[in-house]
Image (cartoon, rainbow, N blue to C red; front, side, top):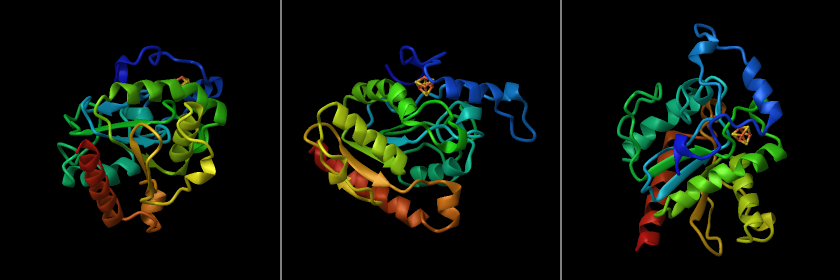
Length: 226
Ligand code: SF4
């Protein structure tokens, strides 16, 4: 099962700290609490995707408001136009979950499905939520490449592979933008700097860098599909 059909995701309360945070989160100016999704945010995209992009967790006033990953905040405002230019998204705009956006050959999700305070999930929260990401990945039967957006998502994914017995030491997989690794089994992984507003404003992430990364991923997916 994918997205909103993931068994157990709807109404999940396994992480008390995150449940409390969502219940008390103040809306952004010009919004009311009723405008917010305020619940676990499922992944979305093409069920036959060869590429999956995994972020850290929903943004407080982005995905946690709209109910769709990277939709309605700076990270998505940067990313979706570039996904569109690269042919992975049907349109450049990603404003709300009903905007008609469709992904092609791409599925997008997060390591943790509920918004964490300060964008920092705790280790136990990663582990609580890991089965949902594993279920999504297992359901992507053509999956060839996983993009891990930011060090948090990257390390969480490595921990999942270690728990599955696919890799040994995490230290053998250092994080660097564009670094790609081939575990003993399963899809290749590619690390990327996050597309956060901070990274974009400081020049750590640029349009050219993200487009180059998408080209790299497309080549890898094609080679793996060989
Ligand atoms: S983060 Fe994941 S495991 Fe924790 S409450 Fe949300 S959906 Fe459940």
